Structure formats: C-alpha cells, structure tokens
Image 1 (spheres, one colour):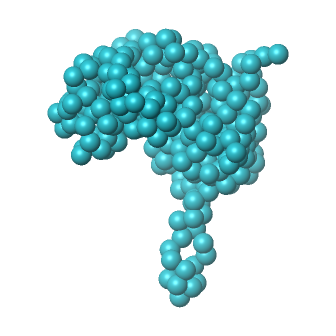
Image 2 (cartoon, rainbow, N blue to C red):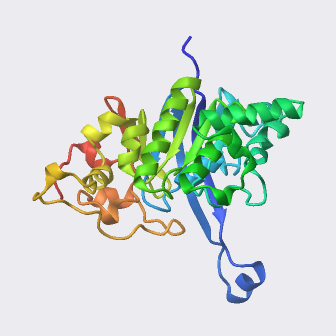
Length: 332
C-alpha cells in the first residue's frame, strides 16, 4: 500500500466573526460580519516533500499555516496527520510533538528575556524528551551546531544576534522536539536577500538529512521555486491552482497564476510587454459572486460572474477556472 500523506487537508474552511460588539450592532441594527479566511481547501503533502502556498496578502496562507498545527480549529472540514484527525483530543498529545512551526518574524518570535539555550530547550522540557539537565544542554549544543551556530551561543540573548542568526535559533527550536512536519510561515521575508539564501539552503539540507516534510508559506515566487516540490496558488481563501511546482512555473494555467508569474523580474523578458495584476483584492467579508477572481480576470465572461468554478484536473495540475475548462485563451 502507498504510504499515506503526512498532512492532508480535507474541505478545510475557517470563518472568523469580525462583527462589532453585540450592543453596538443592536443599536445600529447591523448584521454579523463573517470573514471567510479559508474556503473549502484540500491538499496533501507526501513525506519528505515541500508544498508551498503562494498568493497576495490576505489570501488565507497564514490561516492555513495555523490550522495545520492546531493553533486554529477549522470551522468546517478537517486536518489529518498520517490519517488521524488533528482535532481529536486523543490524538493531540501524541501528534503535537511531531509538528512544529517556524514563524515569520525572528525579532518577535523569540523571548527577549530568555537565553538561547532556554529558548531551544523549551520543547524538550515541555514534551519530557530528556530528563537530566546535562543531557538537555548537550542536546541544545548539538541543535545549535546543526543550524551552523556555535554551542557557546546558548549563553547569549536574542538581542545579541542578527536577523539571520535569530532565524537559525528559531529553526533549532523547531527541530528540538524531533518533528516530522514543519510549517514555515514566510521564514525569510524579514531577512536580507543574501541571508535568505543561507536560511533556505540550511532548510533544504535539514530536510534531506532528517526526511522532514514542509508546508512552506510565501509570497516570494523566487523563493518558492527554490524550495517547493508542489505549489498551491491561493486567491481569496481558495486554492485556484495546485500541482508540481516545475509544471506550474513552466506552464501556468489559471489567469491569476499567469499574472503572478508575469510579475517576476526576468532579464530575458526585458523590453517585452507584461500584464500586471490589476485592480484590488475583493473583501473576504463580502466576496464577489461566482469566481472570486472574475473582477480582475481578463478572461472572465458571464458564467464566471455567477458560477463558482470547481477544480478541473489537467494532467498533474488541478485548476479552478471556467476559462481553462472551456479552453478560452483570449478575453471575451
């Protein structure tokens, strides 16, 4: 039998209530305001691979990241870790150690009052992985060495490190519980470009060494191309295209994916006309009817304005687009 995916999202939906307080709504006769941050999203991540999710700010990427490790509970649908529902109270203690998260901001995600050795050792103590303090110190020193810091750095505080070094500390902390699955929520967006390359290469090396599985969240397509085995493109809470990363980069199908890739700087395209992504992202509180991308889509027609598209499989890629399903390639 084929090995089940490490992580699987099944019809995942998350709705946030962003209404004003009850009394204010009652006095002004306002209805409740619901924000659908994630809308019927499904995907699976095989062991030892990386699924990257990309899209504009507010498309639901970070919400999926938090749903994937149990920081948010789904409003509908489920998250399965090796076939077990993450929401199951019985499964929670056993599964929590096996997943961890690398946060976006290395300046905000580390406790400034703790020494580095205590920050890295916190998951070890929380999950009772080692008992003696000498064993914990030795494990912390080994982890710091793995992320290419010195063991003596454990005596320092976060403010004594650069942004790239702090992110290495965050990676060491994420690895300290010996996880199988890591959620990487834009782990390099707050870093300089040269430091980004060092962190990404480190993450690739660690993945190969420990057979780690990554859910990689980013808005930087150049970073995603370096990291991802599979790519999911999100728009307004939905995955509009998902498949092997190289296939999507070589032959994007969805109009939104094409517009995103067209925005990547490329010397080979110098002097050629490019189509920018026009318009504004609609409000997720009041999304448009039909396909959510139709107000900005150059291929939209009447069907797109009233009917939400299902996913269509084309080779190894799934695309949610009426224009692709109907073979339309020019504006109508």
